[in-house]
Image (tube, rainbow, N blue to C red):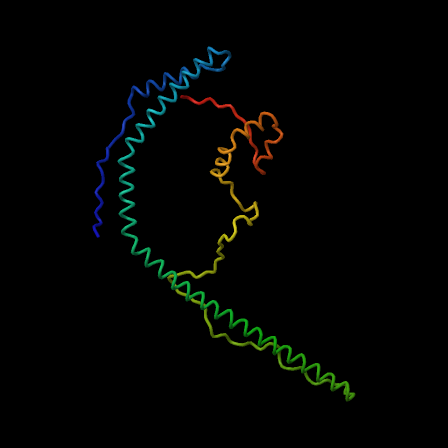
Length: 239
C-alpha cells in the first residue's frame, strides 16, 4: 500500500484585511453608544446596526471557512490514509483481544468452579466433624461417662487449588460489567437523557397548540411534557 499522502497547497500565512478591522472598530464604537431603545425610530436604527454587525461578522466567518478548507482537507486526507494503514492492525488487535478474553474468561470460570468445589468440601468436612463430635458427646452421656473424648482434628483443612487465572506481563486482565438495552421504554427516567431532537420534533408537530396553551393557559407550561417547562420568548434576529 502506498503510504505517501499528497496534501493540497497550504498558505503559509493568513491576513485579515485591514479594511475589515477598520469597519469592525467603527461598528463596535457605534454599538457602544446604544444604551437603550426608547422609541420606534431608535428600534429601527438599532435593527439596521444589528444587520450591519451580522453581515460584517459573517463575512469574516466565510473568509475563515474558505481559508481553512485546504487545512481541513489535508486533515481528512491524513486521517483517511492513517485509518487505512492501521486497519489491518486494528483487525488483528480485535481478533487477539477476543481470543485472549475468551481464554481468560474460561480460566476465571475454572477457578470459580474449583473454589466453589473446595468450599463445598470444606463445609462437608466441618459438618462431618460437628456430627462426629455430637455423636461422641451423646454416646458419652448415654454411658454416663463424664470425660468427653478429645476434640476432633482442626476444622476445614486447607485444600490446595490447581487452576490459575490467566496472567501475562504484556496485558492486564480484569473483569468488567457491561450492559445492553433490552427495552428502552422500561428504563427508569432517572437513567435517561433528554434528546433535543425528540423534544424539538414533538414541538414542530404541536407548535400551534403549544403557543395557544402558553398564551391562554400559562399554568400548563409544565404539563405539556412532564419534566419540561415551555415558555414563549421574544427574540430579535438579524436578517
